[in-house]
Each structure stands twice: as structure tokens, then as C-alpha cells.
Length: 97
Image 1 (cartoon, rainbow, N blue to C red):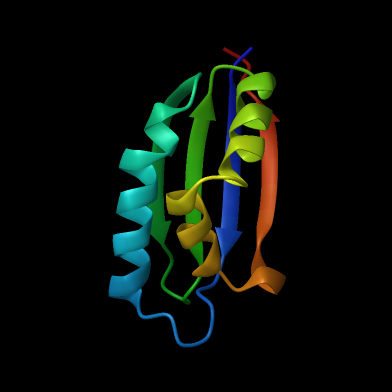
Image 2: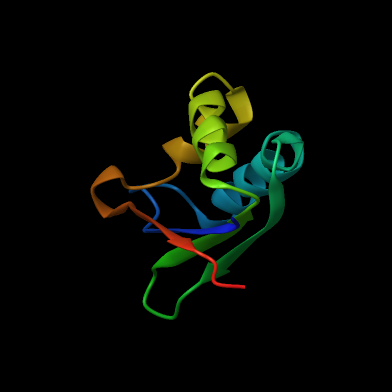
């Protein structure tokens, strides 16, 4: 069953938008799209400074495996350091279709 994962966050203090976008692009091409079960991933910015990453996974096992693999990947780690830790909220939803 497909899983929709949302991650909302703000950028860490001192992280410029251009720095984050570079890290996000690198993580997307070098890490995320190499993960089993990743169907689609997109990044969006809200008007109030909040960001959203929306990822569609083939299954919750695929999403879990990616989370674990990201702990050991340089591009994923660089991406994570751009986020303000206290602002990060991750949610998963089971797709109904």
C-alpha cells in the first residue's frame, strides 16, 4: 500500500535559502531517488517561512528503510543539518487508492 509522507520544517538559523535548495537538490538526486520504493518527492515553500517535503513511497517498509539509510548518507545528512530540529514534523498517511 502506498504511503504519503510529509515533512514540515523551518530552516536552521543562518542557513540561506540558496544553501538549503542546493542541499535539497543534492539529497534528492544522490540519495532519495536511489531509494527502493520512492515514487515521487517534491519540495515546497510556504509564504510564512515554513517548508514542506512531500514524498510518495511504495510502502511503509520502503519509507522506513530510507529513514535508516539516510542516517549513514552524506547528502541526506547535509540536507538534515539545514533544518531547525525543533520545527521538524514528519507524518505518514496510507493512500486510499
